[in-house]
Length: 61
Image (tube, rainbow, N blue to C red; front, side):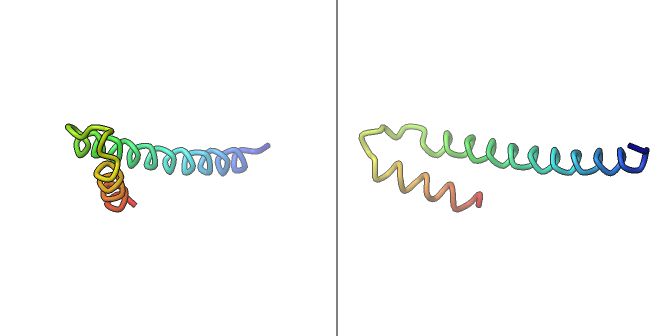
């Protein structure tokens, strides 16, 4: 394998890694937002929980 082939593979892996990192950051924001929104709601209110989760999900995707 020559230098150019190695460089292409490195760039490809770097792009994939950056995309994965962006996805992880988005999921982290989603989880943080969900905890804030769902704070104080008990699992005894499944309709409220479901509605809030759908609302949070729609804002991030």
